[in-house]
Length: 444
Image (cartoon, rainbow, N blue to C red):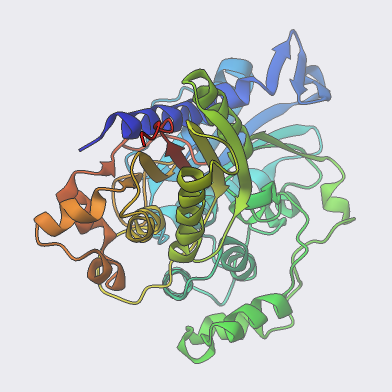
């Protein structure tokens, strides 16, 4: 049951979601003035292009495509985007293909083939607008021979289960793909390419977001093999994936390659912008506010313990800011699956934090994904406070046992402390919020 402090945390999170909305993000960076298209700081004469095509993939690509249609309208000759099931919306000029995430499926591969065909048929006098957002890696599954879709599905599953971070997962994905790691730009060359990117990656590394289909790739086949060795996945991988990674196939295009000569990659939204909006909202609610970091990574339960320690510091000593206080962070943690429970990194974060703030009054810790989907669940995350464990014990729930089983979802569902936004249509990674209420005057 949400307390007053928890409700304020939810309002702060909502402000982050609003800042990450894909349509407004695109329209802040893309506009048209007559026959001039302005993308960031670059200007393009639309009259110089024979055709304009739009392609893309990601959880936010439908909202991004809708905004691009508002800007370019009938100038769009055609296009296609891959989106997650349930995220469809009606578009006038761009095909919308729903497909699987986080495990790629047959519809995803068919859509990726369509996107690759559009790119490869674009000529030197054509403009290709590419839309990339979080989830694009799974939603753009064009397997490179001899790898099959089934091989990609199994490889993705193994990487998810072992706790590989997004940089590691995408490095492997690039090297078993026909479009990732700059290879979509290779297909489109010599057309002009403008890629609009909604970042879900810590640090906004362009070659990592959606596995960088139009971005020079700094990773190599050797890097991909090293990641699989790190997690001891070699013998568990499909044989065709091992064959691909050990082959002498041409590597992904690197910085300086001619295929990027007419490519612009533009970030239109990010976790940092969402966290800044959350901070502004928190200040408006009367909280002294500090942004801790937007580079948060690591095992969810361990990062949660650090946040819980900060909550203790807030309440005990008024550091690093005096209550009423809001500490914000963003990024993307990982979960190493040890049990057979149900949950996601944000719910696991909240459960681990609950164990360390059990005796603290007037403190709330919230962790939620901006896409509204945490792990395999249909909720964004959860929040915990000093009463979480006591309320759980009253229901016969042992928090430590649920954490050991990676079963955070069933734990918080019974407490009614899940954050259910529904699919948000965007994705700029995760937000963590620590709120501490006003310091109470002690009487003595």
